[in-house]
Length: 474
Image: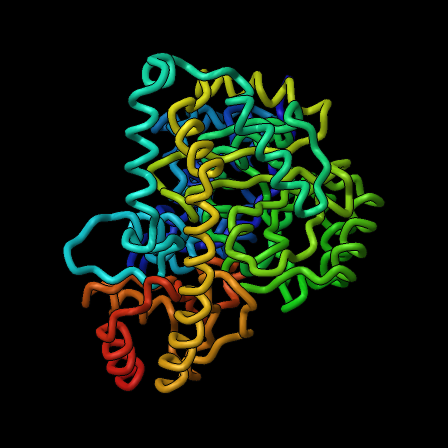
């Protein structure tokens, strides 16, 4: 059976000097690479395509003829033109927004992760190595090395280490989330947790809501799952409820992904009022919510959790120890409704087989012996001091925080008028500084005047000296 025609909003995006025919051909090829045109899909009629591209019908005819000669499309007399080419391997760069392509979520991740001597990383999302509990990790490693051989060499149980899941059940209960160990699935990270949930909940083309701005890797991960992404403006107390309701009515989303506590990148916290209104709208719309809570242990006073209000009915809660303990120790978790756990466990086995038993044992040891608690007490104190110091230093050069976060490591800051954050990030990178420009967090590309600063990574005087020089020259 022939597939239905794909309605496309087509734009000419080619460089100056490229022929009109090549522009039409390039648009079709890009749509095929982006999976909005799949094998068997019918292309727009010559007339409608010519109108959309603002070219003549003869230009489209010639472009279609050339594409047919290349084997990309084929014609059916009386029916039109159809995609014939097999799909190329999925390339995230091809399906991402073309606006500001040089500085996008994947660019941000690569720059932050790339090792480099003397490189400053105020744009990254983790604590510096010297802030982490190195000695505690070494002691725990020595203890595990003397333990059972299976911990060092064998696969872990599918759900993950039971004693750690039992301890995590007690920890999330402190945030009002009631869950048994059987409702907790251990993962290798928070990112893997979201990936598993997207595999479980989404099919290509499903609509997903995110905050605008939101953690930039949400965009990249959702693009990998071929979801349609829609942003909802974020306020100091949570998502804009009016705009959220409009997005539900217009896009009929399957899923919403958010941080309810210590929002990334803004540092804001969800208010109870907004949380209750949000859940009421979600219930009416049949919306599922992923609550990413990987920054929970940075809080002094716990903020409201959607999973606590909801009782894990339509909210699934995830966490991780990558940001607080060690990025090298990959250990995250999902707290899910009971009837999801078996299917999620099957997906976990299919995609990564066994659990990370070694990492789980390491995390469990540090949680039980008290060293993690003491470490986080010190981290919270240091972050509070770094937050105040960084905000003052940035203010001296005209960079102002959007809000004053109550805790955490992020400052979402507005640049002086007229300065583009992506351009500033490129200039800073040439000077050995990795910044996080606002539009990598914004699906609507409305944050070009913002930067996110990690205050723990902003201790070096060179950062402020270079920023002062760059903003003064802008």
